[in-house]
Length: 488
Image 1 (tube, rainbow, N blue to C red):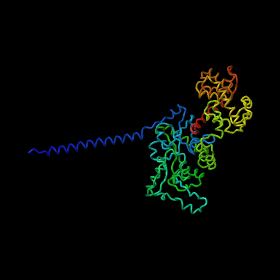
Image 2: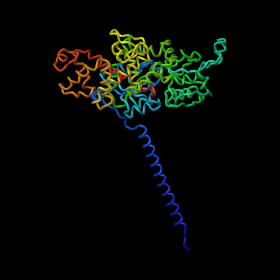
Image 3: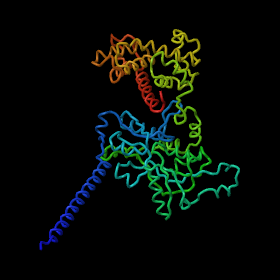
């Protein structure tokens, strides 16, 4: 009789063999997928050498928009990071290009992707982060604290009652919920703390678009129960929100630093050298105290309607400036920057030369423009924008709109005739007479020198060239800040 057993066994063997092969390839594919995801997550960072940065002439810095880092107050850019960055760029003899990230969670990917040369944000140095970026020497040391709210009626309560309502030891967080950003050092610390105290702390993750000071404000307003923050930030916020308690530490001392992409060794070394020198100077501690310890200044900013984190305002004259901006057809924020340059929004300002009001009109010019009272904000801004329009019309041969505005502003500052002289000088020195940047602006500087202003083609003579040079430069630099913070 014919047996089918050997044939049946062979089929079983073949089935098992095929299954093993399929499992092998499936595992191989899974491993490849895992490796591909890993490579994508940690793709090769992009960086520029210090030599490349200097050749470009611009230091690109990434920061955040917050109470302490970078903001606009009464028409002036301010912030701990902003002030230090300004000094670092000056140290390198570079133009500073600040770019604001709208999501704190994206800071490390952005710096690794080459979107900036340096990340100027107070980052806690952690082992995980050190695998992704290079940290500078620390700017300061701090520690993390629990931010909690006292009872609403705490001012009328006895001290012992307030104490009973608060957490006094991190171990009391077991079983409770704390709200923090997922990609923050606070999140990692709460995970580790949960293990250390042997009990579960529930973590409510918040969007990366929220800054630490905004989250602290949410605690003060009762929108969330607890959060964690660096002590220096929590301390300055609690000075304005006395309902907050920040006395419970949840970490040891930690280093707060800036960061550069991997491969930026020369920029890192330069920054560390500069930081070392800065921390030997009083200025560094004056800047730190201004933003993290001076409670009166902080309160004044928080309560001001001309604080960019509160309102979309530059000054109390915004609506007036907007109403007259159409006269010359410019962005009102550019004219606001000019007004700040002229008077810092002081309608009663008067210069040593007799210029008056918001846009510092000279008496003769004011009369020609029909301005009877230069100290009247409405009349002054109407006259100033009318004068800008007249000057702008004289440069209709300049096709580039930005360059034409710069010629107009320079003429407003030092006089149309001196700008014509600078253009004439540009022609004789092989520069482009219709381009302000790196051309006519260089010529206006030379008109402070007798060797140049005594040449036969110069009709209006000596001018303090540094004044219009800086005037145009400062207005456009401030305008860039205004565009970062203030909607059109």
